[in-house]
Length: 288
Image (cartoon, rainbow, N blue to C red; front, side):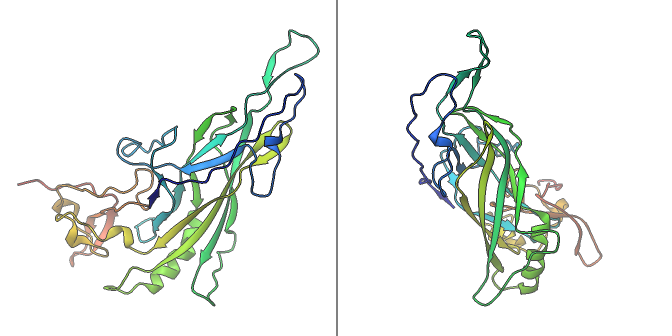
């Protein structure tokens, strides 16, 4: 799910204009073309790049994720988190405030971030339609955490692009398709994300960043290659007291996405069925 190629959008040539006049062709909106604001990539959280702390790298990671995986069979309400690297591609352009030559200098090409606009489209087999639950549409805005984006600078964010209320109908559908012993059911959710903000008195938004998410039932809790975990493919759940190690801890910000995760039971009934599950598993056994 990685690739070295990303969407490249050329920078707009700057104009030579008098100081104090605000004009930037790069800020003009062209249908899905350059605007000066760009989502460059989805950051990669791996060893050394936030893998243990849910810290999204502030500069571009050498690897980028081009699609995601969300397992809705985890024992809590799940969502999907997107880690965009957002770039202000505009060159610096400062003008003088007021009439005094000694007036303070204000950077005119600062972008004041506002939100991320997300649009979801579920891909089913031909002739099958999908309807979101009432009060939870497939198109919404998510507030941005970072307020100011200076010219030439980049920021990283954490954006919830599939919300728990979006996950709920997907869970119901996939759970109904699940048959033990057969392939884990899945659907593809096409997500389109735009960064939105303000440049001076005008609104500005990035071209859409397309990011497909494979939503499945159980797929990230199966296929373990480690011999200590191989026997616990979904729907099997080991007791935490029987585990001494866990090589599958999932994504550090959201264990339900992108990476294999091993869960364990902290309580169980007389038949050994899990009553309370911890994900990722925290081993409580003692090595012999």
